[in-house]
Image 1 (cartoon, rainbow, N blue to C red):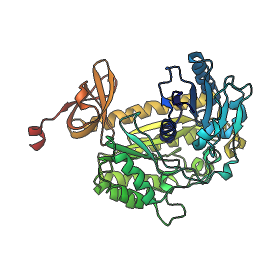
Image 2 (image 1 turned 180 degrees about the vertical axis):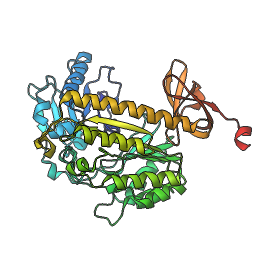
Image 3 (image 1 turned 90 degrees about the vertical axis):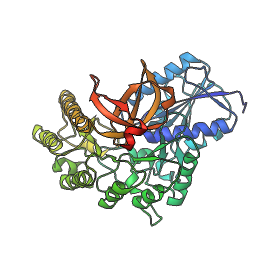
Image 4 (image 1 turned 120 degrees about the vertical axis):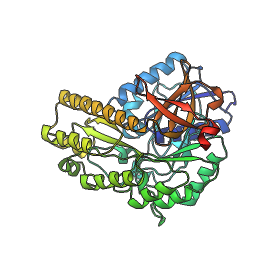
Length: 439
């Protein structure tokens, strides 16, 4: 391949996708390709797709159309979850040349033999049952923080979810191998790492290890100042993990714990692995040990059988527990899921109305959490983005902070005092001097 070929990447979806895109991009660069911006007329576009949103097809078409407007002769490759689930559908998008499934995407360089536009897209897509290897990945160079992939796949088969069909069975590297990846990140200038995966709490498949073992080992990695745990199932977030985080050197007081519903009836219908009493216990344990912890929550509205009464159980439950914000997902029917076959579908207008109601509740929860932090001193990792003379960062407990832009603070951790909440719901802060910190 010519070393002068230019390649650009576009990533849809989750932190896991970003970690994998970044790793694939480094593989291209190691083979002499030049990674460029999406708008810099690349020879190759690689689009990493997502299947979570219900308009995945529409979004993919828009991105391909945008890519070909930039360079009509570019070679377009589609990878990711949507490419695994519906390769034929993606292959029919005008301008797509190659579609790679979950088992093929990390070997993408082997599949690109010639960079010529094809009349019919080529599909390389093995059965998901053949996807058994774990490919380590981490993001670097795109953001201040790095997303470290520690696990892939899922064995849970919740009735609303297609992820096991898109990513296969749960799998991971060993603790020692994962620490080696973390050490690679530690050798860079990155100060914060977010652990990511499909079901990270399920870490330890086939090795006699578990997620707590991984957390304990990573806590000793020199060169990384902060670790965050991304979304983790409440039944897998053990009290032992919570207790360790409360005393750890590097793990931050921030958890994202999927709830999906505050109704035990619906949790059973969703085939979740917990009920609301366990969820309450986890939240209470976190807040008892780390009162200022930020707790994010995933919720699905409009699941089949969600009557007004069951929905109000979710509203009441969320109001009753000490959480900080919500990620609200409006249920959408997915092929090859059990939920799609269930009766009592909730009308779309009601789903949207309930989603808006929970979004409002989320804003209230977030505001209350931010107000509880005013006047406190926190450490903030500042990011590189400048917006009208302002820069942003996050405290250890995930409060978004803004200060006047100062290039010397990019990718630096500074002690601040949280002073007030602005009209956009972001917290203003004053950077503390050494004398103020010592005091």
